[in-house]
Length: 180
Image (cartoon, rainbow, N blue to C red; front, side):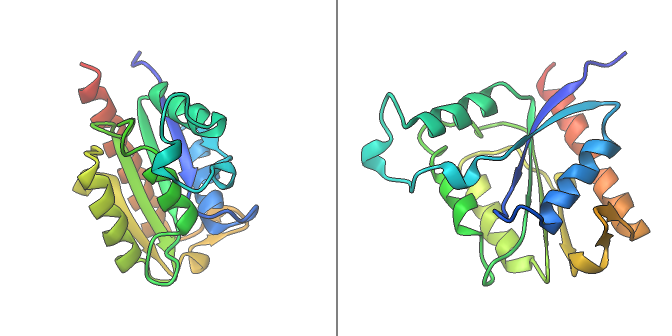
């Protein structure tokens, strides 16, 4: 039996009820047989990035975030697009990882789910590539008009469900390759 993979899921939305959090919760259920997914819920507790604070020891919330990332096999980011870009809290969280390299070569799936998503997705992908996150064409997805595809916390659109399933299968494959 294959080893279960540990994934840290990060929502780019700070809303307590959001389409992206619904999406993560749906993925938790869909992958329950193969993955142990922990949702990082402290994104809005991270201090504003300041290089003067990026020293040892880093602020406690930053250290906890980094430790959680070190302890997993892969990362899932589900994020909306805000004003054609990356939500500020998500960008801030990633900025805290630049010097400490927790995402360097870490298998990562990126799902941008919002009204449109293309520009925010491209911008975040550029950042993830520059810090060497291991995100591939198969481990990324844009879900435009997400509110028409997720209702009551469930993916109701069959095509979207298949695409999400494929992204997670690709992430599992990437994590398996990385661990060999």
